[in-house]
Amino acid sequence: MEIQFYGATDRVTGSCHIIRVAGRTVLLDCGLIQGTKEDEALNRSPFPFDPSTVDAVVLSHGHIDHSGRLPLLVKYGFRGPVYTQQATIDLCRILLLDSASLSENDAAYRRKNPETRKDLHAEPLYTREVALRALEMFTGLPYHVKKQILPGVSVCFRDAGHILGSSCVEVWLEEDGVSRKLVFSGDLGQYGSPILKDPEVIEDADAVIVESTYGDRLHRELDQTLAEIGGILSTACDRCGNILIPAFAIGRSQELLYLFAQHFDAWGLHRWQVYLDSPMAIEASRIYWDYSELYDEEALLFRNAEKGMPYLKNLHFTPRVEQSQAINSIRTGAIIIAGSGMCNGGRILHHLKHNVSRPECSVLITGYQAEGTLGRQLVDGAESVMIHGRTYPMKATLHTIGGLSAHGDQEDMLRWLGGFRTGPKVYVVHGDQEVKKIFREAIEEKLQLDASIPVAGDIIDLAALRR
Image 1: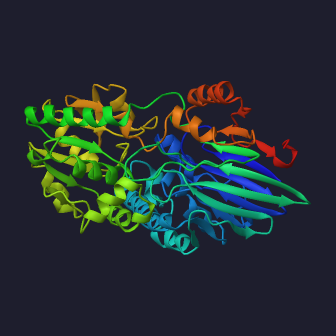
Image 2: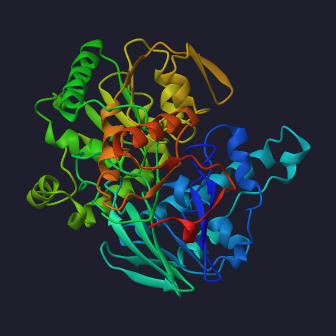
Image 3: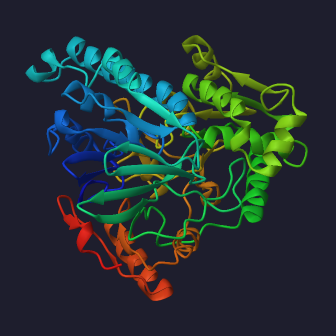
C-alpha cells in the first residue's frame, strides 16, 4: 500500500500521483506539463510506469495540467475507467479536444515551415481521435457519493471550489487487513469567491496531498479587488484605449462575465463593448450555465433571475476566426477576454500584437502565470515581448489582479487543512520550490502537522503511517 509522487513535484504543472494497493494501480490526475518549450517537451517523455498496467484514473478536475496527458495514457495502452465529477466530463470534452487540435495544428505548421530536419516529420502529441477515445472512458460521479472503483479502493469527491466540478478526493485503501485513508486536495479555490461554493471540510485522513500554488502569499480581499477593477475600468476609459484580459477559458472567463453583469452600472460598463473571444470559453460558459446546482447561494439567485446566459447587452461572442480578426480594427472602447490565460498561445497573442505597444491600452492579468510563459514575462516587468517572431515594446499599462485567482491563498489552504481532526501526515506538491518550503513551514508552525515536500519518484508506505 503505497503512493509514488511523479508530476507537479519539481514544478507546478503536470499533476500525477500513483497509488498501488492490493496489486492494483490507480493514478490521481494525469496532467500536461506547461511552461517553457523545454518543460513542455517533457510531455513526450515516456511515463515512468507502463500505462497498460494502470487499472483506473481518478481525476480531480478538468484543467489541462491535471487532465491533459490522459489521451497519451490511452495512446500507450491504458484501457481502464477514468472517474471524475460529472461536470468535469463536459469540460474535459472541450479541453482535451482543443489540446489535441492545437497539437495537430502545430505539427502541421512545423512540417510546412520546417526550421530543422526534425520538423519535416513533426507529429502531434496526440490527435483528436485519441482524445475522443480517452473521453469514452470517463465515468461521472456526483459529489458526496462513496464508490468502490477497484477491490480495496473506494473514492468520494468533495467540492474544491476551484472551477466547476473541481474536487478534493477522498480515497479509502485496504490491503491485508490494513486500511488507510488518503485525501488529495486537487486545486483548492478561495473561500467566498464568486459563483462556486467554498472548499468542503474533510475531517479525517491518515495522509493528505495538498497543492501550494499560492502557499507563500495572501490574496487581496474581494471587496478591494472589485473596487480595483472598477477603478481600472474608469481610468482606462479616460485614456480611450482597449483592455486586454488574458483569461483561462474554464473558470476565469465565466467569473469575469458574472462580475461584469453584477457590477454593470457601478463599473460604467455601458461605455465598453465586451468581447469573449474564445470558442472554448464560450462553450464552457454554456456548461457553467447548465450546472446551477453547483453554484453558491448568491450565484444561484442571480442565475434563477436570468432567462439565458449572464446578460450583458454589450457582450459579443466571437467564436469564428474572422470575428476575432475584426476586433483588431477596434482602437478604443473594447474589453477583450481571450485565451490563453498565460499568454503562451491562442487569440490573446494577436490582440497583444495590436495593442501592447499602445500607451492608452491596458492589460489585466487575472490568474497564475507559470515560469517561462509570456504572461510571466509581463508580470515580471518585461520592457518588450516576443510574439510570433517579432519584438514589441511593452507600453500598455499592466495590472495584476491577484484577488480573482481560482487558487486559494495560504490562509485558504491552511483553513482547509485545519478542518482535519486526525493529525494527518501532509505532503506538499503543485508549487514553485521556494513556495512549497514556505507553505510547509506554515503548516508545521500554525497547524502543528508533520509536513514534507516529496520529489519525483518518492514512494511513501501508507501502511507504515501511524494512526
